[in-house]
Image (cartoon, rainbow, N blue to C red; front, top):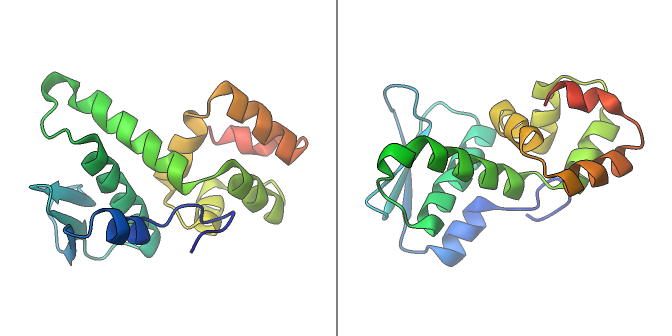
Length: 152
């Protein structure tokens, strides 16, 4: 479904763009919420919320698109770039502004994230990586609801 609050559907994208890539939901150790295996399988952690699965799937799709397997000393930088791109896809400026307005502008990040069907980490990443023109546009959309910036 594509709408202001759901501008990107990773499940549809995977089906249309990557039809040969399978997704499994399984128990995983450690902190991983998901991983791309051999470019043909995306494993998502069992027991996660639908928002976490949506964010993780988007993250792994960006990895697929970038085509990078092992980034060596640049792995941390690559993960940050991928996470920022996933957050941009999942959270449009219009959707973010609509969520903040609908919640009265004073809701905690976790509630805004829930409204946007993303996890809090993805929302925080989106806010932290807003480009200057996006910050200006978001400020215009919010018309002075400054509480949002306390999250970033």
